[in-house]
Image (cartoon, rainbow, N blue to C red):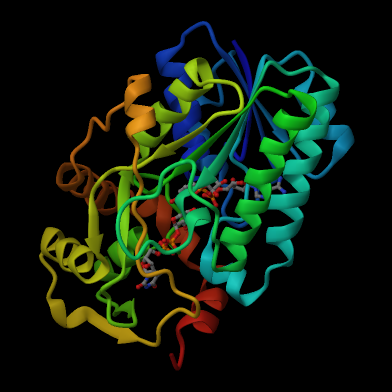
Length: 332
Ligand code: NAD
Ligand code: TDX
C-alpha cells in the first residue's frame, strides 16, 4: 500500500511511519509536513535513507501541493495538526487554519483523486470532560477548549465527506498519548525534562484531573489496524484504560527519576480545564486491538528514553520554546 501520512515529522506521525515501515515491508510512505515548531526531521532521521520513504515539505492547507503529494496513493493518514491545548488557549488562529481548513483541503483532494481510505486522527478531547463512565463512539461531541473544538470540527467534516460524498473515511479518537519523540511542552516530557534539570514541575490546579494514558506504539498499532480493517464511515475510540490523576502521574515520574516531590509546584489551573477523559474502546478491541504495553512499563521506558536522549530534547528547550514557557508559566 502507498500511504500519504500528514504530520509525519511530529510525535505520533514519526512513530507511525516507523511502525508502518517495520510492519509492512511492501508499503511506501510519503510524509507531508510543514515543520512547525513541533515538526522535527530528527524524529524521522532513521528512515530518511529508506527507498520506501519520501518527505514532502509543505502545508496541508495548500491545495496544489496536497494534490501533488496525494497523487498515486492508496490511503491518507491525516495526523498533521496544531496539537497543544495551552497554545490554543493563547491564540487559536493556527488551530482553525490547520486543523479545520487543512483537513478540508485534504478531504477535497481525496475526493477528487478517489482515495480508497482516509483516516482522520481525532482525539478523546472531542467528547469533553466525562464526569463518570467512558465515552462511546455514538456519544455527542462536547469540546470545551479551542483545540478540541477545532478537532471536533475536523472530525465532523471528515464524517460529512463520508455521508455526503461516500469518501471512505474512518475516524480514530485516541487518548492522551506518550512515549519517545514527544515535544517537551506536553505534560509527561515537560515534567521529565524539567525534573532532569531540577526545575519545578508546574502542576495545574489541584492536580486531580484524570487522563487515560496510551503508549504511542499502541496508538500507532491501532491507527494501522483501523487503516486496513476499519469499516467505511466508522469511528473507533483508542483508549489505554489507564486513568490516573495528574498528581499521581507526577509522583511516579519523580520516583522513576529519583527526584524529590518538593519539585512539584502547584500553579493556577488551565482555563476550561477538562477534569476527566475516559474512553470505551470495546469497538476497537472487537476489531482485534489491545494495548500491548502496560502503563507502568511504558512510563519507565519513556522516562528512560528522555534520560538517554538529551541531545534530542535539549535544543528543543531553547529559543522560541523559552519564550513560550515564560509566557505560559511565569507569575502563574
Ligand atoms: P505534534 O504536534 O507532535 O505533531 C504535529 C505535526 O503536524 C508536526 O510535525 C507539525 O509540523 C505538523 N503540522 C502542523 N501544521 C501543519 C500544516 N499546516 N501542514 C503540514 N503539517 C503540519 O502532534 P501529535 O501529538 O503527534 O498529534 C498528531 C495527531 O494526533 C494530531 O492530529 C492530534 O490532534 C492527534 N492526537 C494526539 C494525541 C496526543 O496525546 N498527542 C492524542 C490523540 C490524538
Ligand atoms: O504544565 C502542565 N501542567 C499540567 O498540570 C501541562 C502542560 C499539563 N498539565 C495537565 C493538564 C492535563 O490535565 O496535564 C494533563 C495533560 O496535559 P497535556 O499534556 O497538555 O495534554 P492534554 O491537554 O490532556 O491533551 C493531550 O491529549 C489529547 C494532547 O496534547 C492532545 O493533542 C490530545 O488530543
